[in-house]
Image (spheres, rainbow, N blue to C red):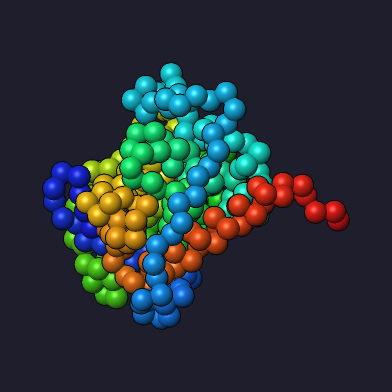
Length: 271
């Protein structure tokens, strides 16, 4: 769950990821064991190829309707192969890859890979499919994904910051959307990605781009996400749990390997 750091200088609390939605669905264990640990290093930087005919700079989040939407940035063939190889829903993958391509242009020193965004997307909401939902063609989740109340009962305690406008709870904050932003962090980092001019916490394009910018900010003082220190700082800003870092790492590297293998041999296996 995106929480800890804030571009306007205020410190926000980190949270509990997908287990804040439903205890036990994720498990949040990885190669470092139940409590996380020294086996966790940092994820490889995987790049998505740009779609043919879509030039650098085609996406402009400040010009709704007048630019290429984020979901159109990645190569369609690569999306097909990678979605099949990894099991990531293609529409979710469009958001992750598009966000990474935008940040590669805007903040090339950040080096946030689509695979890191996908690792977070898996842990936070199973790519928008948790509770049986899906990412629809327009990028919105078919059902609202809203976590449990962060009331300190097994989770971080975060009193209401939005009057219930984002999460529907006027007493406690809750993590919201496929990338699980708490309301105050969303208020600081909400970014437009799909071209309609309105950042939507329930839209995978908007949420992925917001998450990518948040990660780049969180890891910049430690060298960006291309370094171990920067990657770990960025993931810790999203969620401080060592077990969370382990699981994001596991899935981010797995996705990168599966995508690379599929692109190296793009011919479908004979049935």
